[in-house]
Image (cartoon, rainbow, N blue to C red; front, side, top):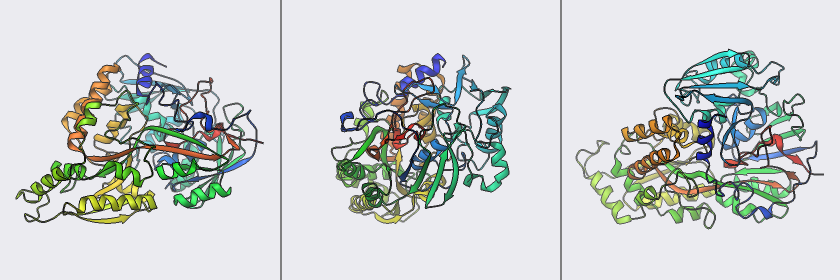
Length: 541
């Protein structure tokens, strides 16, 4: 790993002083995880996920946290993070930048095959990139927009040529953009490729009954000797949190994934269950669509922000005593957390909220074109979960007290994500932040593209993103992130609620959920955002 990439990775960790240490194995303490024992071969498990995913082809599939759990079983990421936050090759053998950070050269491991027996080589990566990942319909095209071309150097080496320096580029290859799939199989399947995924991962795809179950089985030709340990995994989308919890308690499933604070708290009370919790940079937010009136006016966004009581919202989500209030994209244990931005984020102040609201609706030049004095009317969207229903009702109550007419609309998870991508909403609940490099996280959030869900951009943010792209100096990068965080606090394109404590809760017989390692034995980063590397787990006797 090059020095630039090494520094980048370490700096991006959400707390080298303990952030990973006390979260991936349980916020309540690692002593509450049962003994792991020695690896056991064989057996099968069923995992309950919070939502279905629309497709399993990288670039087409919306790999949110539930989808990532499945994707890591079928595919291998080219890059991954260590327990110390370092970006390190996983499926790739090496990745090195030039001095200007405009060219990144990636070398693959030899003798790796896709599940269909075709080789993972440079031509496969180029086909993935040219024909699928950068296609106009690809949902990762924006993440790869800075790449002008991917060139084949030799059979196992490719060169990513960037239009401009980008110190954060390797982070792109930790997610769907860096999950190689068989171009031969994808071409043969055509429009059905998303229902017939073929990767290099520890498990081979067997079947998928949408909204019911996806089944994978051991890849007997896996490139990592000794993995996987399990014979078979069934992933079941179970959107209702109560049903997923009761299914774990009854033994109908062996593991569940959740990002709901109330579920985490309840799962802690189950006997015979281990909780692999993770508190990183992810937070609950409400997205505000700044591309449509009246939300293009900062006064309206600030009024929405001053009207909400964060502790009350966190309590509704079951996070009281579990998670801190959020004011930015980075949690207090991150080296990129800004006290100044935290102080600048709008506080609960109903009087100030009313002043801002009245100023807008009585402005003859109001952006929505409505007559002076006309109250705002808009829709708040959220998935149909009981705790989220309560959350929506509380938001409605806060904003209605100002005179706003707020309609509540429940939207299934897959459509909810698609609405955010298409900016087809007024205000909606969502999640924001990640353990990725801040340049990557903030670039996706605030540059034009599908993943800029709020549509907010600004010259100040553009200037600071350029700093993040062109330097690996930690202090300079901290200053740039703080400037962006201040811009977000002052212009509130989204409203923060609280940081998310995620959880993968498993029956005690399911072992090594967060103990995955790199091929050279380097410990990995556990279960960030409730996503596990299931190829490393086993089922105790």
